[in-house]
Image (cartoon, rainbow, N blue to C red):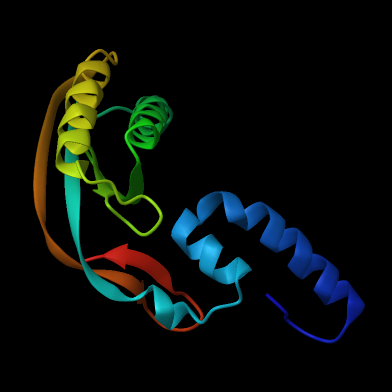
Length: 161
């Protein structure tokens, strides 16, 4: 994360790196720490993906934000406990969709399909208990996917396709 030869910019760069690490998946952080090119993260591999769709009744922004924050915390905690990585969150007017990937580099497990199904069960049980959540639907699938860094160099992301 070196931006310039000016000390103040390098200091800001160090602060940015420290705080941004929380939002970067572990496989990516590991490659960055090893100073390996991001291209080394790109591969075809078998993964299991869990899609969670949550429908709520439409509310004002603050109430919707509270519901989605509670859902986010549940999905992250449950996914982490079953070696899943939250990859995407899509929000819309009546709820949101989470995409969780199992079997990413550093999180590969011989029984990831079973882990994903257990995570799906736990997520549904906890999410449906959130006040004003109308419906929770979850799909789990296993197959070969592209896992890697995509996007313009100024705004890249690690994703599963």
